[in-house]
Image 1 (tube, rainbow, N blue to C red):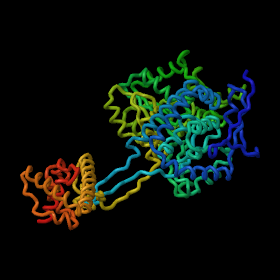
Image 2 (cartoon, rainbow, N blue to C red):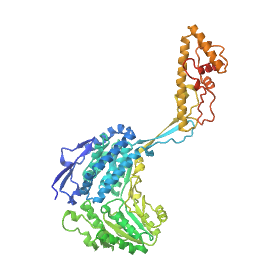
Image 3 (cartoon, helix red, strand yellow):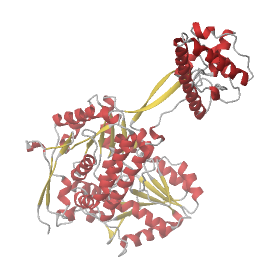
Image 4 (tube, helix red, strand yellow):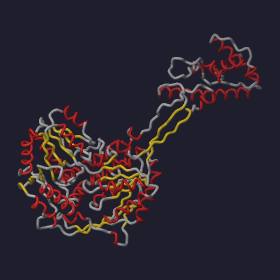
Amino acid sequence: MLSPENIFVPLIIDGKDVQLPDASLTFTPESRHGSARSQAHVVAQGANTEMCNAAVDSSARALEAWRNTAPQSRRALLLRLAHLLRERGDEIHRTMQDEIHATSRWSMINLDESIAMIEETAAAVTSSSLAGSMPPTQNPESQALVYVEPLGVILGIAPWNSPLILGLRAILPAIASGNTVILKGSELSPRTHYFIASLVRDAGFPPGVCNFLLHRASDAAGIFETIIQRHEVRKCNFTGSTPVGRAIASRAAAALKPCLMELGGKNYAIVLADADVAKAARMVCEGAFLNNGQICMSTDTAIVASSIFVQFRQAILDILQGVDTTPEVTPLITSKAAARVRALVADAASKGAIIHTSSGSSNGATYAKPPTGSAETAVTLPATILENIDQTMDLYTQESFGPLLCLLPVESEEEAVKIVNACRYGLSSAIHSESHYRALSIAKRMKVSAVHINGATVHDESTLPHGGQGDSGWGRFGAGWGLQEFVHTKTCDGLRPKCSGCAELGFECVYVNSASSSNVIVGKEYLSGLENRLRIVEQDIGSLKSSQKRQPQQTRFDDELNGRAYRDGLEPPSSLGRLRGEEVEVNSEDLQEATGPESGADGMGAMIFSTEEDCGFFGMCFALVQLSRSHES
């Protein structure tokens, strides 16, 4: 037996652990009552109104600096977070096994998928997911820019059943897109959710970017109301049951705050007559019994073609009752959860359902009565198959959220689709068939948000969108879809600006004439170079003026100028009086005549500066002579 251990779980506000001096708000997770894996005594700190407001204030203060942090910096911090999670994997692996009674496999799935999700989110930060756009406008000389900007402070509410994946999912897309967050952890998995917030702090995220709150179950409504009513809080995301989600959505709506909701699911696996029966049976069992069926995507019902129903049922029972294939079960999260599942089975049995467990057939009366013994035994239910079910049973329409699987025969695929679409939920599903195209055709007719062909209903990846429809919620987590949930657009439009060279010289701006971006850049650089040359010309003119009194040098200058004109086959200038005694003005007409005509074939309306090679600027520039002659004419 393990030695007793006292564990205290604090809040995190503004980068610091918070423990109130008054212990009246502390609580012990109810999930501890069914665990014999350790003798740890866990006490968690619950929040009050003051702590909620302090968390919002902290996140609001951190927002301005965080939203202006370079995307590359945010990406680097996220990658650092993934690195730390990989380093501390053993620690969180053990914590989940102890805290939510997770099997070793389920806790490892949580760890591996969480690392992948962080890394995918880091990649998305500098992808087109957060890029703006430049849509066309009616006026050809105007330009519209559409920016994406973070919303503000986000409240993320995470559940206990997949605490690492869903706890991180509640905060990652919001943080990555420049928001600050408050993670409201579950009272059933406070250690795992504290681990997440603490890891964010250890990775180097600034204080206030991720604050962490817990509360007693009885305080849930008041805590949420306090936070959602704060103006700084701009959105809430929630993963959990449909009844709680409905209450949260209604209160958020009253405060005019949008929500991202991933709620419960009543998930079906359709097994067609041409399916690989053995593989379909394995996938259905995996979807039904992983984590004791306590997953929003868990398979509730297998809808099976009647022509293979007997064969499929036997394949399922062989897995269920096989020595090496029996699904691994652990205690359900609480005694209340176990009682609810037992009641569903008892109701179905009383109305004619046939029940099979890993130990053989059972009856409703025996199943409904908790076995005597330890607290852990009382909340541990066997993997259970039910057949001969109908619409009079509670289990037919209610989400079981336990280790239960119903088998339902149908005569056609149309009947199967009708059963699926009659359900109020619409989260996940599966279709088993050797014809992939047939399965795709059926999938298009199903009112669900995910269809997994020849796979389990429990399936999600960090590169895919995830969410539901109907009573399963709305909005999407995952990859770029998840980031876009936490930004809004800002439109800025107006006349296209002219660059300084075009504005000063009166040129037609290259922005107005359509061109490739590379041509525009080259044209702007060319204009900037011309501006520099003109400045040097002006300096040379000034030098000439100051040297007019030096007549011997002027004669030498005239000779040099006449000689250069003779070599180039040009008419020598008749007079340099304008250069000697008057200021030379250079306007756009002079410049265009001196530098050559506008090219009609360069694709951007830029100027071709034909005398660039003559601009030596080690004395009098020959381009200046041309400008002078043009000015005289």
